[in-house]
Length: 61
Image (cartoon, rainbow, N blue to C red; front, side, top):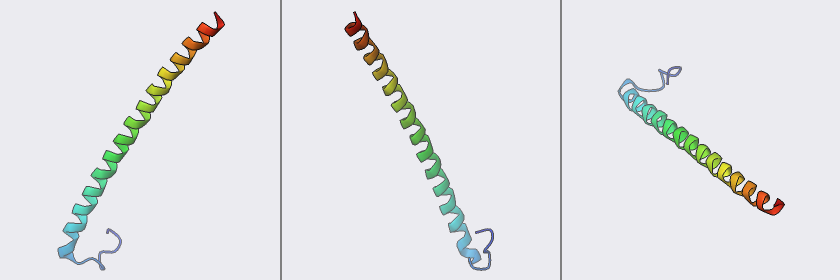
């Protein structure tokens, strides 16, 4: 949008800015959800390791 001002009519540029803003917000939301999912997976794997360690302790005893 910045480099091709001649191709985009001035009355339409406002809509492109609005669309760019929406895309930026959606991208940030997706990034936040991805981070939450990664943390949830790490927590699950940590709990699973603890459970497996308990099983190994019982088998070793």
